[in-house]
Image (cartoon, each protein chain N blue to C red):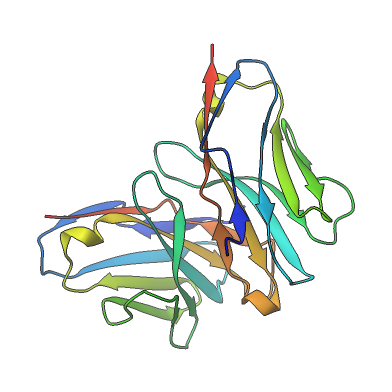
Amino acid sequence: GAVVSQHPSWVICKSGTSVKIECRSLDFQATTMFWYRQFPKQSLMLMATSNEGSKATYEQGVEKDKFLINHASLTLSTLTVTSAHPEDSSFYICSATVHGTLYEQYFGPGTRLTVT
Amino acid sequence: AQKITQTQPGMFVQEKEAVTLDCTYDTSDQSYGLFWYKQPSSGEMIFLIYQGSYDEQNATEGRYSLNFQKARKSANLVISASQLGDSAMYFCAMREGLAGGFKTIFGAGTRLFVKA
């Protein structure tokens, strides 16, 4: 299957700072990328859908001003957690896909964010 | 309402035996895909098996098979000949078609413990 990378794999930051997480599709052009958040011992919760060249669509309850998503190219989407707080500590996972397909979706390895 | 339901928070199975992990789903979309993923402690999402809503045959991938009962809206995962390395979290997921925005949503997960 296709390869999706995330960087960094883990990050520790101080409360009040911003953190950027990158999601790259390495061998295909991802028209759509999804961002998920997973708290310990819980399932993956969809945060937002990002389509290349357009604004991200956020799920209900997700603050778009806090979680900034940019999908500037067909191979890169970024998630920026602004003014991070300890409750933002979580595992963030992206998945890359081609819009309109059901089967083709590939997950990144995830980024573990710890806010102190 | 929950779209993906996994009713077994935890399951135990003896090594070399088969185990069935339950999953039911709810959608009004005619076109959708069903997935099973394995998530070990490292956090990466490992794709196991896919079933499209129009597929008439149950999907199989090595030791994994998906028992697809469309009328009942169930998509149970069967793991045959369990191995110690199968101990992990297992998620059932559904990706709806156009009506659902091609988003993938996850069930709560089932933690599988394989006993030696």
